[in-house]
Image 1 (cartoon, one colour):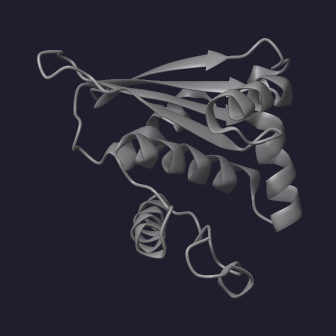
Image 2 (tube, one colour):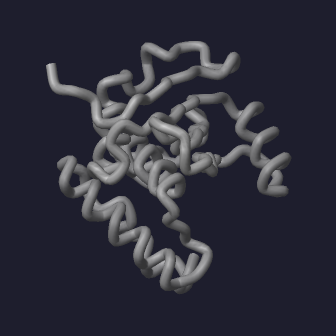
Length: 165
């Protein structure tokens, strides 16, 4: 058995009724490790899978935006003396992931992988608030997804999006 590069605490919110129908811990672990890419070996983070209600409350409380969202990231700003480093928390709304995969014509597993990677990249300091930041983050996501055997998560979206979105 290979040694885990990152310790992932996988949690399920109270609204998640069928966790056995979601990606298993091994797949989530692999996606997290791809996003960390050896740069934070020994790090710890939480991936919490939630329902629409919890996602909506967190989105409204911490981002000031109404409604549930697909993924939220909460980076942990650790003191330098802390070892192992805590990267933070990634919160994914199972219902939004499923709905988006259907709406966008994507394989469900591929969309799950993308959102886990997206959330972890936010913990690592990536962002998409400006066009330049978005281009950098999306390029990283494309490379990681391809390395895992998944298609480009942004294929077909570029024409529909304005720069920086």
